[in-house]
Amino acid sequence: MEQMTVTAKIQISAAADDKVLLDKTMSVYSDACNFVSDYVFQTHDLKQFSLNKVLYSTLREKFGLKSQMTQSVFKTVIARYKTILENQKEWIKSSFKKPQYDLVWNRDYSLALNCFSVNTLNGRVKLPYFSEGMSKYFNHDIYKFGTAKLVNKHGKYFLHIPVTYDVEESNIFDICNVVGIDRGINFVVATYDSKHKSGFVSGKAIKQKRAHYSKHRKELQMRQTPSARRRLLAIGQRENRWMQDVNHQVSKALVENNPKHTLFVLEDLSGVRNATERVRTKNRYVSVSWSFYDLEQKLIYKAKQNQSTVIKVDPRYTSQCCPVCGHIEKANRNKKIHLFTCKNCGYTSNDDRIGAMNLYRMGIGYLEEAQVPDTVTAE
Image 1 (cartoon, rainbow, N blue to C red):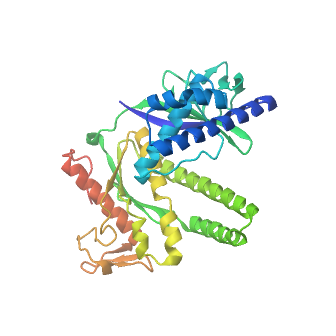
Image 2: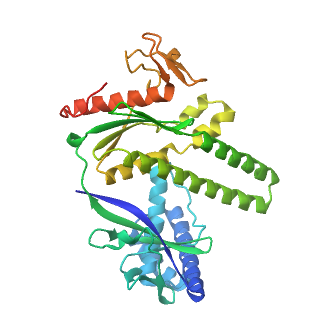
Image 3: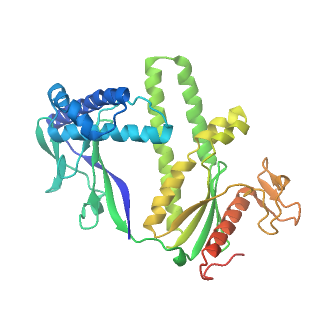
């Protein structure tokens, strides 16, 4: 068994008085985080023990925080800076612009009698919740709650709760199906599997909608007014939510349409941003902002839930190599009409399908190296 964590976003219901109290608590908590963030940025001190020694009394007196809230503030700020250092490799000052509140399970929040009990600056409040689609997570024999985040989105309150549970580990020797997945722009994904079937998810509608967002964004940027800037932020958030929903649907379909113990093979696109230097400026926005990584992450955790595996392989020549004879030549691929024609054997197909076929064959090679029994055969 291995442990897996997903985030359950549970909407809670709050009366008018409770909303005021929640908003005040989140606002004060964020202010306290910014206070500690200023100190951490100046001192580069990321040890909770020493931060507690220097700032504990000040946070209690200045912001009126309770003991547990104070400790949570330290943990929130430390975690934020560790993430920045891991991703950016340098000290960049972090600010907490939106009100938030991190709650420790069974200390700052608990669950009883169909409602959450949440700790605030003025004591605990009981908040009913909407359980539709989330009811399974309340079985504490299976699912374990972690430190939640209380957020306010458009006047609605949510608890973002990390939920940990055990899943059966996928065993490479149980693989019964291989799927090569070529990600792209004209096709969100092109697939090729062990039954030698191809599949495509068109990216045409996505390109059109993103072009609409891009045009609207440029118009607002030209206005340079406060209302335009607020509108820009709202549009960006809406586009991000929509794109995440698309990736959820695509990754869910990939997992549900394939059996358990499937090996999904993806190109390693970690350097895709650097490749934009070779892309024409007018096409650079689409290439660099396409959410390849988000789709990859969603597929990885959904595959784990289905006892399947995702691997990433070297992307070089996957669209230039003939899957029939192995001949590699740049001229094999005509990007303008998305056609692959092998200059050696004459094999012809859609260039995205060729990429998926080559990824499939690389998956077969991966299994052969692992000495998997002949349950999967190449074409």
